[in-house]
Image 1 (spheres, rainbow, N blue to C red):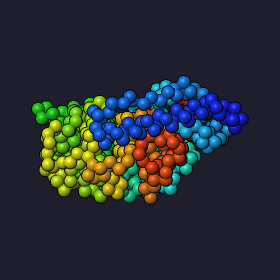
Image 2 (cartoon, one colour):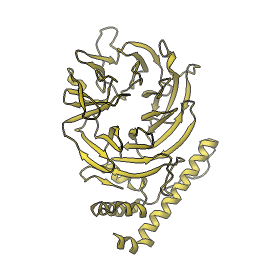
Image 3 (tube, one colour):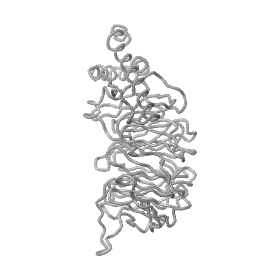
Image 4 (cartoon, one colour):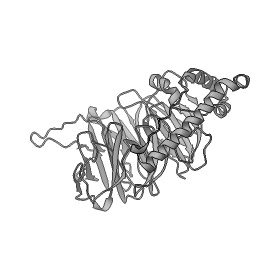
Length: 419
């Protein structure tokens, strides 16, 4: 590998680095201009990453570096990029989601969507362990380090990952086994289960569909939904649910509606409470873009915000993102969007930083000390970032100051690699 690098220093490596740095610089300058002056005032050309022709050779070298345990050397010579590898993402990329922090440097994640046969893994530092194939979904409570695992029509909650069992639940409605999002309540005695057939509260003796609402004429459920999404407040006082054909509905802890927040873009797509539970954000989308608004949690009981109407009840915190996932920490949200950006936005809508990873972001987890971030995308990658540790290279797109430890690459029909 070292000999190859030396022999090709003035060809592949030089071209990769010169063009990569130039592209990142130009993209960063364009985005900064657009944010400050308005995109309508940008008169320059959109930068192009002209390294796609190097993709095959770069991937071959990456595979070789993984086989020879020389990933760090490879990473130093070839900083990672997104655009030159798009053809590989299209053929081999996989959705990674349901990613949760366990402890120290350990996370758990799933490869695959609710419509596929999933596979769960543990990532501990940079070591990957495959879990039992029977696992279909994983979730974590907002507080208390309570985990939930679905296997077939059974859900088990535990204290800590694979710790003492708290409760076991049976999914009675088989339509509800393809779980998009699984969130145990903080005591582990109830489950919020989100599926494309409906959103449920599951307890030991009950399984209640809380969304969508029944038809008022025949009292039947129209339970085929898209863009299904839900969240629970950290104190479990409120539940918020929505889908493509509804507004965001605010429910109490038992699933009874107490308020409604209309979509300010087209379709209700994502929702999340701030870490202190004082604020709720809701995102609605249209194609790859969207709008995120925020309301005070003490106004949720009885709230009524009409769709597509200005209101003093909410503030707009973002006008661009179609949000797929996010976390709340301190006074910020870190949100992942359809374009492959993660952005830190505070409660007043001030953008603190943005960092580009590429392709739709499928999951985000943060360490207990809030210094390490793991971000998953549909490229089949997990990016491990050290927040505020400084850029590792001059190829970074965004204005954040984060250091990427590595990218874990889980492609179809390929051994898991690191970059």
